[in-house]
Picture: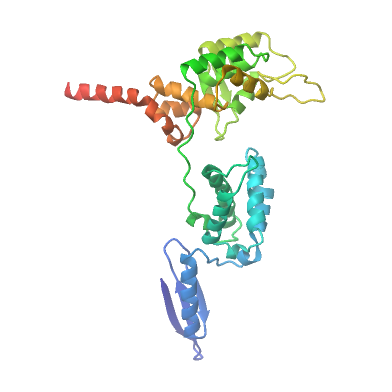
Length: 357
């Protein structure tokens, strides 16, 4: 809401102070000698704030979006090592497309225009970008804008807040049937690679991600207590993983013949002083096993979905599944809710029986 105050100094000079106060935004004010100028400024400022075009600082006119991205990539991104590779590519796209614009000219409508251009783009695989990818590109830029607001004071507000994100799909739920599981495990056991079978069993029994499994080192595995402590996870929090049954027995056998020249449970071959320690690449044997087992449309990450699905079908609650998989919220595991309907029905039946007899 705009308000204009008339002021008269002791020497008889008259001025007009215009104020614009809108909920959720800081007070904006300016002083003019003429009432018409004050009214024009108030009207344009109020309109600009409502449309997300107003930036009170001169920094917004001095700096371009490229400046913002360059500073974020140089000063902030190195502190997020897990995000560097992916977000460097994401920021490069935004910089290439919008980098020349002054921050004062970057509006929600402009970002929405380039969001649509991003969504219509073709990936290196020859497919159109999916909504989830677009959301992640937008999230990266939004965080950079937030730094510019809170820490650098280059702009007053994050224009991303007014830009709608594409609706992501409910998420893929592809899990192995009993027959597929038996066929795949048989093919893995017959593989020339001795690590493939224990890796797949570990994925199915714990729901760990491929990177988490291949990054396992002997110092984080406690075979006597049946657990592994993951210090590096996707959500940044440490997680204890329970090791039990066949998976635990396989690791105990593996521990008896472990390589002394590597800290990894599943090390690459040919480690020398010139070649640093690293986990083995199981891509080729994994693909061969899938082909031999005649299993189609299945990725290694689907082993994690399989583990979650088996937990749901065996009565685990969504909260329990989230804890096993290491999700902070239940949103990611809601895709398995239909598989636990039997468990939910039993809980409801038990409650009704206790209440009504």
